[in-house]
Image (cartoon, rainbow over all chains, first blue to last red; front, side, top):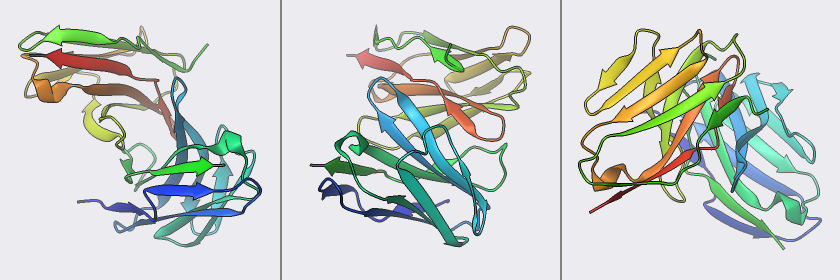
Length: 112
Length: 107
């Protein structure tokens, strides 16, 4: 079974802090994704990566950056957290783009 | 216009009922299609892929109409455990999610 692990289930940070969300997958998947999910807006893609050190912007990249130094790990960085970044963050991975994605448990991030 | 549109519901049905969800997508270049299920405060989980010929998995049947750009999910003999939000998902190079249809199966 595919395992996608996110480092924290719940996280509370303050405005202006630099926040790191970590995601690890154990299936040697090429592609990894970061989404946020908000009520009424559904899942929106922030960034994705199709190889080590390769990344592409998704639909809502502003205020975020990512890092993929190793194939199994994909980090989402909030450079200077703001209250409108309070959300549920979901990491996913797949082996090929036309395959379904497997999700981690999610991180509920609150920015105060 | 949203790329993937679903009726948000909620659908409240009695146990044993048959319920159908519909979804339309706007990009004809979409290549693969899925239904995901998401329980409250949990991550989305793949329910089933959707194939052009239609496919069935137990009580669940998925249909795809490429000409009309329309996807459907039929649930027969609903169980209490089917209560969840069902997400229609369309894939080109990345997944695009509908906002989800909420289903509550009542005893």
